[in-house]
View 1 (tube, rainbow, N blue to C red):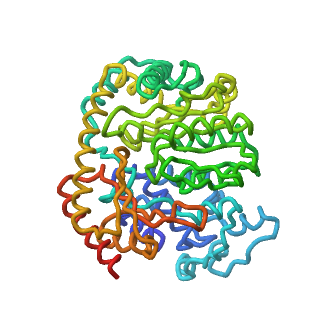
View 2: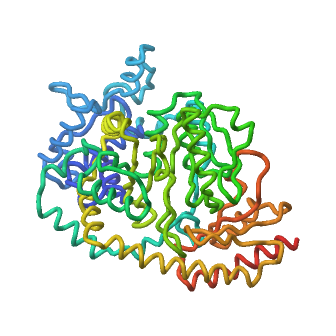
Length: 512
């Protein structure tokens, strides 16, 4: 057996080549890897197809097919009457750059020894620094949330309670209909029956003033915000954002090069002062029904004032209603959009919190004058699809399953919320308070200013507990200290166990 046959036989025996790959593909991949790693150097002569087939115990046609694929991709060259040789990839790459061929040693010369090529080893790769755009540097420097499905991760729903079998039945029925129109892009703002179902749901449960044509189906809140930022603002324009602010909105606006002006949030929501009113925003981002992350509810007076400001400033209000389904006492609050008489509010929501995160289906309600532009941009920029998922979701809503599911998980989350509050209250000192808002998917444990909530969150992570530091959500230096503690993605047993550990950790930190 020749040295090249030995080398390829050893490569084929490695676990990296999946046993279900066709033998021709396995041989091709093994030879290509050996060439890239310079274990088969440029100019190395390959055995004849007959000899290699005999050495490897495979059919000659398999070897010929692999050689032909290698030749088609430029890895080997054939010389009539002489044989097949490994191509000089470095020389080809250099010539493409216009700097001439890279000199080769004797072992790489045409007809040179395979042993010499193997002994030369792989050429060291020069690591070049990666150049990101300024925008890319800012985005990559601010890492997003980690460990999202660990106990107490805020904002994470318990998708293990999702009705899989029911959803599967509905989805199978959609597929059995074999409708070609559901395999295309969504060209009209989304699947019409889903937009109709959402329209009816928002009218009844959220007091949103909406017609079907105003509803666009997006891939979630992030895409809705990105569309708004692209269509309604230019780079350098100002966006008013709540302080503290949802990190995802900040990332979108930074990516679109908007200037963020943080507006202080108090117990009544966004609180504008004279210095704020002296600026001219193009966008105003708010979470009025359940401010993220503090949980504050914007008062009626503040809502009316904000609508008036938007008209005077010719600004657009982006209302993010991310978890309105989870209100544990009374009915869900009416949307800010329902008070708007001047068409200045764009209203958005998502199904990721109610069903499961990976469904990536949200909705954006736009004023009538913006419908053509937003529908066109959604199609041109995003090429939305997943119409079979949208069709399944439409049936899930119209057949009443959505209401049943929301009612069930609302009861579950409410009980878990009370259990978590009880477990924490048993151990927390008097100078530590727990938020009392009866909505959402997390509690806020407010800490004294002397406590480093970032370090405390890191210590909790060593116990397998994923909480978020409240101070990291602020843009201005004057911050409140605290922890965001989720309870949805936790069993009662986990809440009891981890709640006791977290309460003890907080009490020890405050005492220290």
